[in-house]
Length: 230
Image (cartoon, rainbow, N blue to C red; front, side, top):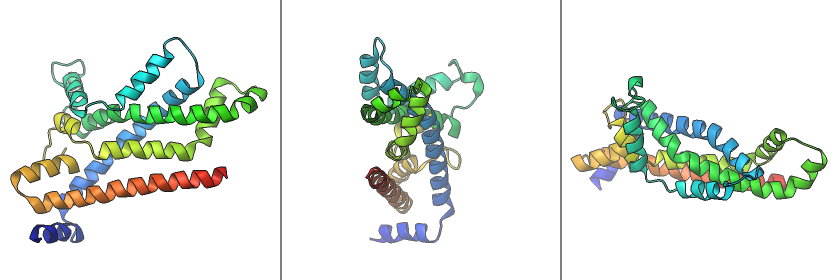
């Protein structure tokens, strides 16, 4: 019970260490989600609207990559960014930038796969109309992405939630450096091992509230899209 009270006290009093960790976590995860959306949504729409040899295999691969092990992604990014790696000259290993890269790789398949399914379902409904209007490939993609914007917001929120809850990859490429690359998840793991339960529990409470808020936002976006469609 004392640990619970101390955890709430850290949150209520605005503990500087706790909120610095929260700010960094949000900055990294939001950046990764936005970059992933720019890459994944056009990719998902392209897969939904085009037919080419090997497309089915690519869709299966994309769906399989939704379950990419974070530690494997972290290792791959570490090898790329290490001094002996091909991108080692950039000097961004153990920085927030490296963490953004790792999280982006993790969530691109999630957003792309959800986008593909959403746009493909919508294409069935809009195919005849868009063909009759002689809309080109780019126009089709833009039209369907815009019309599915509320459903795609759910995909974006799913990607952000995945990024915010990630620990393995960001610990490998970020190094869990105090005040620089320490996120909520890595801090929880570290502080628990050190026995500093109030800080760990405080961060855990913030993370749980954040995840709940993301799911509530996704649910609200879906309801809004259904009402708009109705």
